[in-house]
Length: 71
Image 1: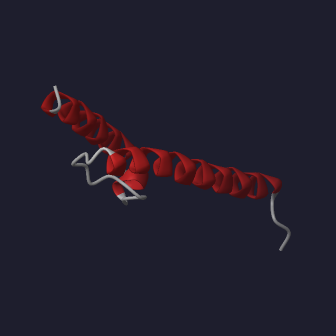
Image 2: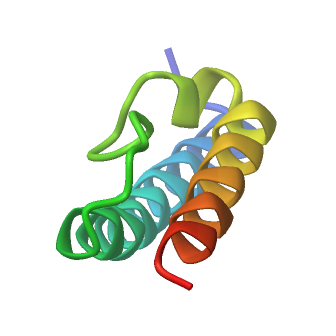
Image 3: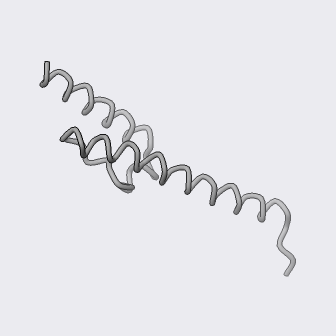
């Protein structure tokens, strides 16, 4: 079977998106770890993939809360 062009393009986009996710997740996870922030959405937690809005909101709230504790 010949692979359709749109499938090949979609596979390349999916791969790029996965690499982008991994790079950015590592940056965020390292920040959370170094600053002892209480947040479970680190190091490719499944919610960062299946429910990214929830993971982002919870991460932002955890960072803000840590800031309040250190004031």
